[in-house]
Length: 115
Image (cartoon, rainbow, N blue to C red; front, side, top):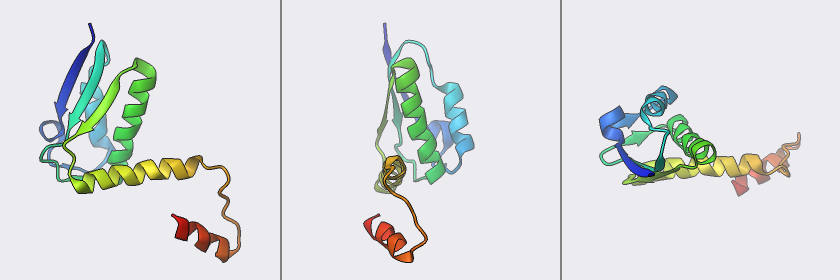
């Protein structure tokens, strides 16, 4: 029977999650067997770095693909939500193969303006 596991980030990592190393701690504690869903609760977490947000999102993707387990993020403050959104947007930009930065500064300005 598959279960739902809730993990409070504050209890595992504290209120400031500032490096990829922190997510390695999470990886070691996340159950990988018989989990239907894992919920990361960000209550009282004040800061998540860009690299940590990237690691959380990569973890989410890996668990869905490898274990068919959904990972959800709850109770994120506005700053943390924005950080996750910035990282997700960077994934979308990197996937677009039509973007090429040429030597002309005008093209670079267009890309920066549209970002």
